[in-house]
Length: 348
Ligand code: AN7
Image 1 (cartoon, protein in one colour):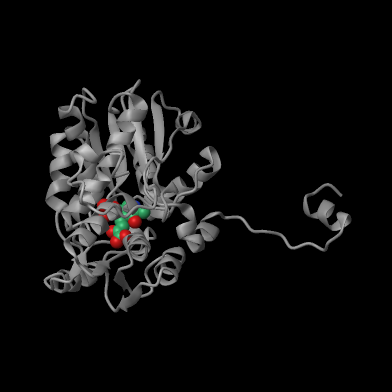
Image 2 (cartoon, helix red, strand yellow):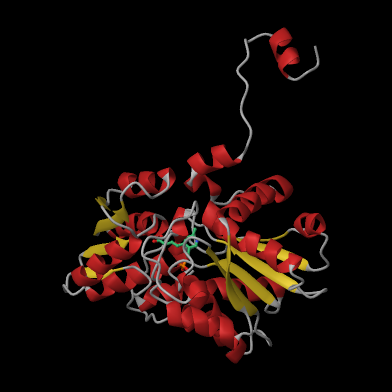
């Protein structure tokens, strides 16, 4: 990814590129979703769960870790709701660096915990939330041998902006509207930066309206005040005081977009709907953008004929516990004979 968009990124020939072949994720047209909503627009899903560690974080991590190696840092550190830690752990392993992750105790999805542990990151569960963990990480970052790879690291945002380049390259133009979930607000900041740079370079001629979505129980930007104890089923965006708050607000206002919120129920309905209607499995936080499309369309907010892109940020397999529960389905145990199977499927 760094090699492909090198001229837009802060790298030189001397930067040692640490990569797992991230980026190049599919942009999938989903007319079945639009039909289900009774809409009249074109919808494309940018499936970021198909990155090497199954979330969009890899785009920023390849650059942040490459630059850390370049400057001679020895330890990669982050606070995380799960995906940043998974990505940091993998890229640190690739770079031969140590990795320390601070996660909120008991509040990250099972798959993400598996990733931090299997890649060998020293994993601390903090008795507190993401915001508490990030405070500590900011302090740790004052040490010279430590590289903080949260999105307060500007290379993270620089790397993540490549997703908007890919959207424009696929469509041949920027979309009219771009939906995505908002947690710490780095990604909406990155996309907006990317779209503007691509337009300035003459690679697209317009800019999309940026439509960011928080979960109702963790919607500090929408409510205009930090949330002390954020709560949502979408654990990835359970964040009460986003680092890139101002940038997110600017992206929404400069683009005539919005930052709004959806309920946990709307998020779970959207996760199920996307899986059953389009065959795309995403984690709950990623479904917030889909829920945002449903809400926006219902309110008449998507003009007919629009080209709409939604970034689904993380793979559904990250959070199997929520998925099984949200499926509202159960497997049936049967004896290993034809009669039992026929009875179970109602064909006896
Ligand atoms: C799947 O991993 O903050 O608004 O520590 O994992 O750029 O923060 C994750 C965030 C959306 C929100 N979707 O993105 C972390 C972390 C998924 C995420 C977001 C996250 P930002």
